[in-house]
Image 1 (tube, helix red, strand yellow):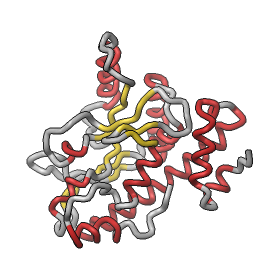
Image 2: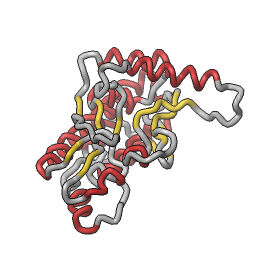
Image 3: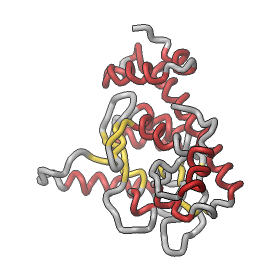
Image 4: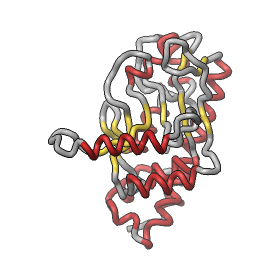
Length: 247
């Protein structure tokens, strides 16, 4: 195996590098692989953060209103970078629900919380396009400790062990597509845990590797689903996605 993963990733061999990392499975955590694999995941997270910052800047220039998915459309900060406690939070997550995929650990430490739900002045249906939301540090809700929320999820899942259909534990990180549009919907999106691999399964309307999900979302500037908004929707999605970095 020609490793040099980080250099090859930066040179554009991203799909091949991710394939090789995923093929290792949990063995990616062995000492001979872990450090370089984490560097690749860190580079992915930096690129994702760049994309988020560019999207937020472009939407803000458009007059986009970032708001909660409630009737009052309460204003919200779209991107909150990692706090000084992010690394400690990542350790806590692994201790309680882990191991976590290396990509998710990098996200916690380098990206932070993102909430792109809102309304574009020229595309009123933008909230229906399943805008990107990843909330893992709980920075948008300082009065509701996310440790307690995640622990409650775990205990509910654990206590339901007699249910043959309970499935794997999902660390909930985002509302589903309908709830983002303030409509009663289904189960939240999240990461399937535990998972010791380089990248993990992100459970949304369909299950995709986390990086594949993010690439899909960024190809449309954070709004992956079409809503029939015509030329204005195209401007906000494909046009605003110009120059974003593939992961």
